[in-house]
Amino acid sequence: MKKIEKPKGREYQPLDFGRVKTYPLKDRPSKVSVNALARAWRAGGSFQSFLESLPGILASKDLRGLAQAIVAAKGKGKPVILGMGAHVIKVGLSPVVIDLMERGIITALATHGAAAVHDFELSFAGFTSEEVEAALEKGEFGMAEETGRIINEAVREGIPKGWGLGRALGEKILELGPEYLDKSLFAAGARLGLPVTVHVAVGTDIFHMHPACNGASLGDATYRDFRLLASVVAELGGGGVYLNVGSAVLLPEVFLKALTVARNLGHEVKDFVTANLDFIQHYRPLQNVVKRPVAAGGKGYALTGHHEIMVPLLAAAVIEELEGLRA
Image 1 (cartoon, helix red, strand yellow):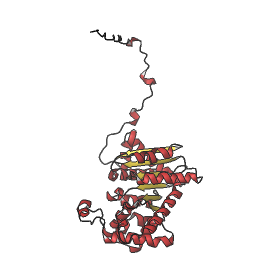
Image 2: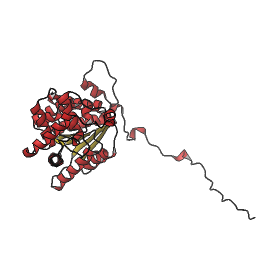
Image 3: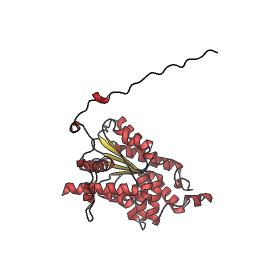
Image 4: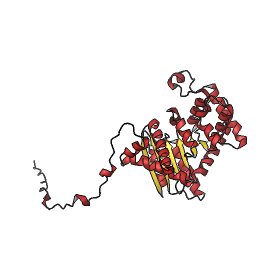
């Protein structure tokens, strides 16, 4: 039997590090310096002191940068659009958002059908968010009579008046004057004359199952809202801000299409700011909000954290920034 010779491996010698070139540390560009370090907190300080104590690094730097961008947009008369999922309402943030609307900081609100449900129920009944598992087994999930009936009534009544779904529901809640009216984002939008749009995916919301639902009216109303949102997005260029908070798929897609049609119609929507705030950074918000829209000019932020902490924190930072300018 013929013996097979194994190929010899190449022999390596350790590199001689004696000739490595170095340079003085003082000449090296670095990303962190003592000027950016946090300051230890002292009891009794103000919220502004807290903001100033944060490190000027990564997310805390971005938080302040986003707050400054929102204040700058307000100063330029540019839109600040809040695109938000229903979770923002479910974690108790309606009063924070309404306050920003009343201050003229948030100038337009875009959301979806689930937000309409939770906003209506909070204002009408003072509570919302049912136990899905328990109700689903009996076929009773989403079958609250007043929720489905009144939202669908609002949609139908708004069509001849030329209203989209958001305006129609806001006006309906104002008309009803429920006990917790002051907790309704939709009513606040109608009262303040601010665009509130609802972008429905048919079959995703409980009021689509109600006997009072009319598909033609629903489609007409949400399409009007898409066109209305596109008109606001068309004004973002030159310093506006678009915030996506708690919507992983629907609103990032709607925003991208609204931006596309605005640019297609000749609006130069460049040099604006976008941000995604969520406790998980998903693909579509990162691509369709943070990156793609501002690739031709602008800046995108991605801030990760729970809405019930991050949204009040950003709101307070914006208000402090505004007060600092007035002082």
